[in-house]
Length: 91
Image (cartoon, rainbow, N blue to C red; front, side):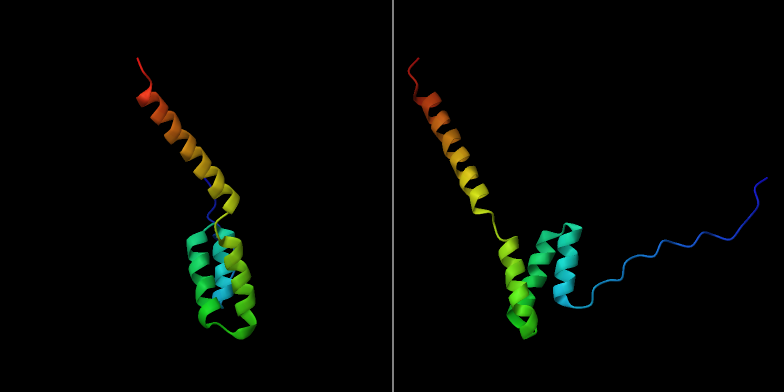
C-alpha cells in the first residue's frame, strides 16, 4: 500500500504582465496576435509617451506581410484565369 505524502507543490506560473504594452508582448508570445494587436493599438493611442513608439513598432511588426498578400493575390488570379479558360474552352 502506498504511503500518503504531502502533495507536490504546483508549478509556479509566470506572473501576469501589468502594463498594456507588456500584456501585448505576452499575448504575442502566447500566439494571440489579435489580442496583441488590440493592446498595442490601445497603447499607441493613449499610452504613456515612452511606450507609444514601442507600441507602434509592435503594430508595424504585426501588420500584414505584403509579400504574402501579393503571392495570395497572384495565386487567386491564376485560379480565376484557369477557371475562365476551362469554362470557355471549345469542346
